[in-house]
Image 1 (cartoon, rainbow, N blue to C red):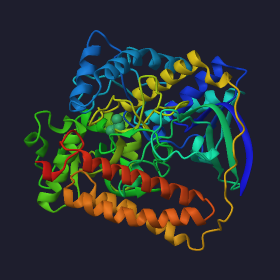
Image 2: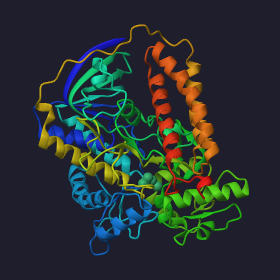
Image 3: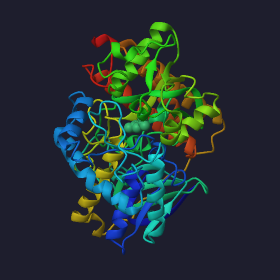
Image 4: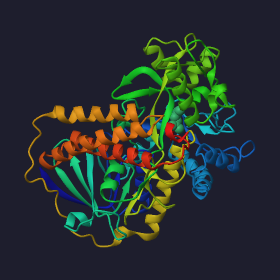
Length: 526
Ligand code: SIN
């Protein structure tokens, strides 16, 4: 059913670290303006909430420097990061992290009161601020608290953004990138009433997170279906670097809960955990002098090689030499989850395998988070800012999230696009559509996309695998577009369409990538 129209000064799509940060800052700066946050689950369900490791940030200038963090980020990005953006994020981060601490976020401290700094792969210094192994949840908790306190933030939980509104919806043909494309807001499906709301906004901020659910094995929650990337792509925004999907080396093997694999944080290796084969060989030294703490792309590929060479579907993470009390204090959730699955990490090795974890590419933005569409901003995992290049440095994502949320806010504050009068928008057209008769068509297609991406577009790709994936994806695309044209929009169908768009972009941009860099590896380019 089509439904009501809402008006807002700023529309934020997504409720992770970037979306809520930008919303809270805007609401505080403009108490007489309305900020609307839409999120398709509850406010607490986002990729941010599952981030275990922490925030990489230079806090201790006696032992660390901005230059080192910049260099580590550039090296991890395998030459494809934008130096200017890297410098900006690394140097602006500390002040913004302090703001979060002022807001109430608690990071672990030593007895001396100094921050307890964690170590992760490819960092040359200890610099990860963390809250045990639930840093993301701690940040999310505080941001949600703040957002709920502000009366001018309208929180729409269980609302799924379906499409961004551009000139296209006024009847103009916007079939490719145009310089004058403008975003007027979004159509949003109320998941409880099934009403499609037309939200008119002075500015729209995409902060809808990642795409992990496009793969069968992912550390991302079930909500990470690439909605923002897909909507921006359909609205003809520039989307780049989709070939750079980061696989986390160590998801707990054989455990999938609510659609996601359980992560064993890289910080566990930073704490002394060692990767081993089944016969206990610490194989990482054969691949990189940094051993188990090499950058994530190298570790994930090495594990993949070992698994294929030995015909196994996992390797092992050995924490047996670590102090049991210290391990349980630093990683309570990881230790308890392992125990729940019958593994005592201080006596047994933990079976681990790589899983899709993070999209380094996404909707292209400039240094203010502006996309190629007027009045459409993007920040967080949905955005391709130039920070990560071909491979993201561990724990740089939350940092990027707060820096770009702040930059979007600063730009909005300087230009105040929401002060201009807003046009009335056409309602969503659902005439001629009916309820789907066979839900199995949708669920089967979703699983097919996920299997196909895992099999053909994983850590190691080849021309033949990519061609095959593209052919198969075209068929699934036709089937789902047909469903979309004739069926009333449901969350399942909207997500399926988004997953297909994202999968298509990953495959196409992989085919266009002519060099093996960072997370991208094509056997035929060897
Ligand atoms: C982890 O804890 O290993 C994940 C952190 C990140 O993705 O940077």
